[in-house]
Image (cartoon, rainbow, N blue to C red; front, side):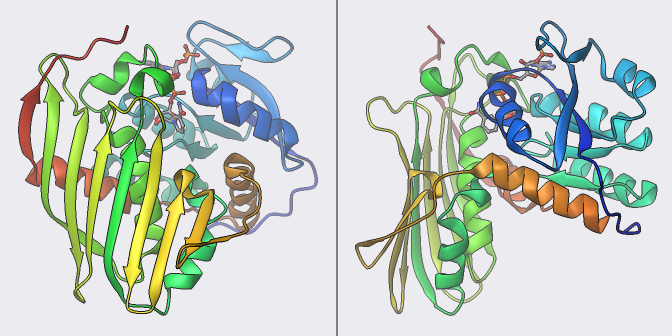
Amino acid sequence: MRCPVKATEPVKIAIVGLGKIAHDQHIPSIGRSRAFTLAATVSRGSSLPGFDHYGRLGDLLGARPDVTAVALCVPPQVRFGMAWEALQAGRDVLLEKPPGATVAEVQALADLARAKGRTLFATWHSRFAPAVAPAKDWLAHREVKTARIVWREDVRKWHPGQTWIWQAGGMGVFDPGINALSILTEIMPHPVHLTSAEMEFPENCETPIAARLEFEDAVGGTVSADFDFRQTGPQTWDIAVETSDGSLKLSAGGAKMEIDGRPVDQAAEAEYDGIYARFAELLAAGSSDVDASPLVHVADAFMLGRRIVTDPFHDE
Ligand code: NAP
């Protein structure tokens, strides 16, 4: 940890990778933040009108020493090299989820951030959904008997044209599924570990389109997860937990909560505003936040899981 710093001016940050999540969430949240100002973008092929633009991260790092932080909004397969380059150049780094394509590279980045005295923030946006912190509090003193995750969405709606998701390291259905695992690892009172997994791989893809997972904890609790990218119609992002003292249900990806079937009011959704507020706290404290536990479960699924070949997937 380096010495805490008191920021007097907004931190100048650059966004790297102007894709869907950069446009949908990062640019608006930075725009609303008093702690950050968007100073530049790095993109292979596009730019933002009115903002300084670079085609390569190295060019930004060389030309703009005043830009002290970067938000990496690129696919996981190319994130490690960029994060390493930015940390080596003395910048603070925010990683979109998942923090890497492998577990070891995340550990290496955490070690480098520590050695260089920089902040590394491996974000899990779903942990900032409004009902997640209340759910964690409610479960903290209860005994979980079972939990059931159902995370089913339409890949054509949410990831149109994203070929990287179907390539090795893109994680397929674990790209959204890891959001559920980031909530699970946050709210469960005891850590869980994978006991079995089954994954369906389209015959023309390197990553799964569906996965079914089973976990248990060390005190008798069990968790099942059903991830599927083929859901049309209503989309489902639910986690239902039965305890020895009542039931809890998170729905809409952690935006809504019910206790024993009764809705509990929540604040409005502001996941990415929460991410940037947390990044500002970490910078002020001179510390990092790197929890790879959701990624470990995905790696375990690839290690332990049974593979089934299924129908080819075509994006149109
Ligand atoms: P995307 O729309 O495909 O955008 C990724 C951007 O990264 C591309 O537009 C491209 O920007 C840049 N890039 C650099 N190298 C690339 C390469 N080799 N292949 C493809 N793109 C490359 O993806 P996204 O949905 O924004 O997702 C990016 C990350 O955010 C993923 O890790 C994803 O899990 C996470 N995320 C996405 C969502 C969502 O709803 N989409 C939600 C939360 C988190 P330039 O052309 O500007 O260089």
